[in-house]
Length: 89
Image 1 (cartoon, rainbow, N blue to C red):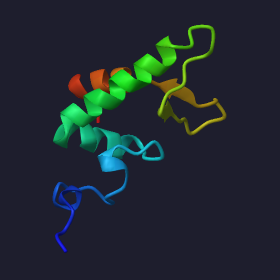
Image 2 (image 1 turned 90 degrees about the horizontal axis):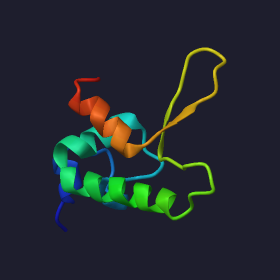
Image 3 (image 1 turned 45 degrees about the vertical axis):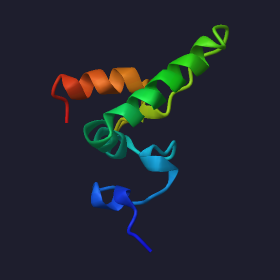
Image 4 (image 1 turned 30 degrees about the vertical axis):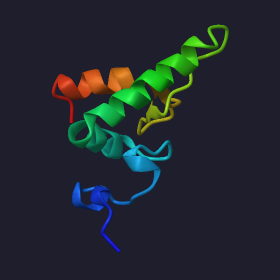
């Protein structure tokens, strides 16, 4: 058996082709850096899904979480990518 290439690229698991809806921001940032085309596909799919249901609240894979009692806030993959490109951690 050959070792799956995602492990060689630094991914913790070989599930979901590198893009996992249960993954956190660190995983998605790593995907953006290592496999930007896959990230772009998921970004387009997230936007297409939300565009297909304009009467509903947008759904996103990622969320901003806070240390206090504030509720989590949705973060689109597009917004997250822009943050990373702007130098966010």
